[in-house]
Image (cartoon, rainbow over all chains, first blue to last red; front, side, top):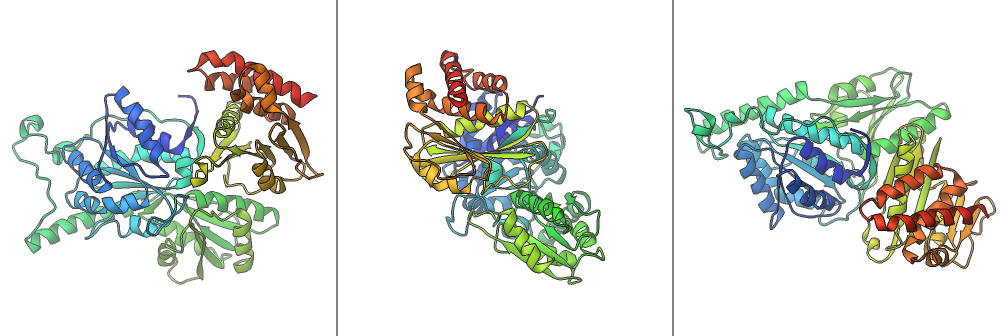
Length: 356
Length: 178
């Protein structure tokens, strides 16, 4: 298919359809309402269903129901809406059902603002819901990457029988860029007989599937959580994705940055290079699992004196960067939030002050 | 080589649309492009603006504080953004609504009365296309042929409007070359 110019939000909607997901439940919230606007028109054309819930709490459980029934399902929301869904996300993880959640982050806390932000990092990677649950979280830095990640998200959710989140910022949703869509995926989860509650006859099975998250017996609950832990460890072993930039030479400092912020940093790195200052960058594409090894290896280059975690938040990812660097060289944070995206010049000033 | 163009005006003047058409045309000519809208609460009846980034290599930061060119469709936008334009850029001014100038001697100022031109063509709604065409003709950022093709595609669902918009392109081009 030829390249088309599309808004991130619309491209995310189209990518989900190409991924064989024909079930979308959502509640509108800026800056991602265009996903619903797009899908309310597009889903009926392909025999899909869009249903607007009465709230994000309801949407979370609609997703749970559809996932339990064995169909591909997804929703999109933004920060406060994701908070409302977080109870259901914990239930879905506990019951080991696959689903995809897209968070196009806006500024917080509270109602915050509607402009781009990355302030839900800790929520997405460490505290999405109560109990020992985790999500596999991918963070796109372009509209094309958002499309590719959405299309990967469904098979990954099914591989792990666990919710997968796409963590984008408002700019990824609002910006238009050229996109090409990969080939269409199969429409049904291939492994759904293992969990779908769609009838034993239908599955030609002699054992029933039960979707539940209540384990009153402590041994059973511990066993269930050990099974979840094993999956999260497997994600750490098999699903880490990151990209490195300008890391071949002897750089004096290393930037760790993701999403829109990483693009600003890339421009800053190019500008610094013309002044003879080399700075490398690791861009996490998965933020859970975090690319600990890539960050540690890049930070351990003998020429590297300092690691900067640059985020559109008040310092959240830095906890993972510090965990990766393990105190071997200094790590510091720079960022802004609320939609005032740092400029390349501001990043350069910080690099000059702390590194060059 | 990277160019950034800021389109700014009132909500309802078709600012976001002409930005999108330019981004589309540049994409068709093989450039990397990004179209970034303002989407704050100011959009509801207030100012609307968008930035188009056009580059021959992957685009880093799509957030542009100092664009190379400005297309200002109303006075407040010109006042606000004229000082941010890079030296040597083009400042396009909708002189139907803006009586003053950019007050810069290091840019190429292009004044076109797009509202009057569009009214003469039969619809004030085509003023944005007159402005886009004049800007493209002056900057040469994409070819007029590609621009026309992309405008036709943009209006493909309302084919009745295509002849008017083609006239608007021609009129904008003439105004820029005067």
